Amino acid sequence: MVEHPNFVALAEIEYNMFMWKKLQIFTLQFLDSLVLTETSVANLFVRVKGFLSEGSKNLYGKPIGKSILMLNYDWKNQIKTSKSTMVSHLIEQIELQSDLSENDGHVFSIHSAKGQEAECVLVMAESESQLMEWLGENEKSEEARVGYVAFSRARKLLCVWAPTIQEENYAHLQQHVVFVGKTYATEV
Image (cartoon, rainbow, N blue to C red; front, side, top):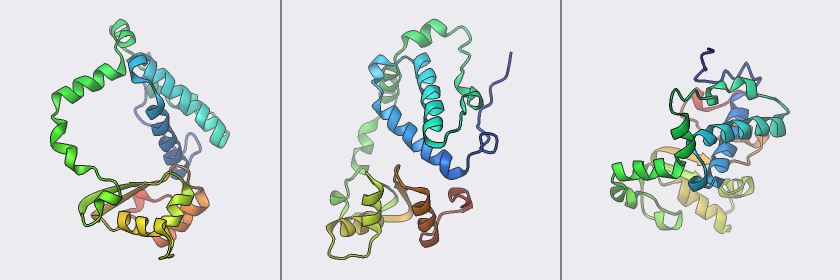
């Protein structure tokens, strides 16, 4: 029996960190599109592996299917259960075990965050153009003002999610934004 790796060596699949992060963002979008009441635990692994393989071929022309063996999960006497248990059921079980009601007050839209401050802030741009508008210095632009509000709420950590950003614009951001550490920035 072959032992499955629990990580992907980027050098092995000839990826840089930016490529991997971009594929991860598209994977989050893919996961969000799944109908969890119709997706079994066993099928989830198959579908994610298929998505990563196809996504890598489409985005970068690189086949990586053989390098993501950790998704070939060996269920060890759980095959029947993994095929019949829906992902939505597992999520419901997690929600029952944790009281999510005490976290309700910690999620804000940009507009509702005016006057608020937080230790960490996640800002999600729908497109690269929206992110670039937020970063612009045009004070007459409502989008630029909205971006300022979003970016100025974080006391310690600001995380920006922009799944469609092009590599050259990411490199531009690296020149003008202070990253937390080298591990968060890619080599360009």
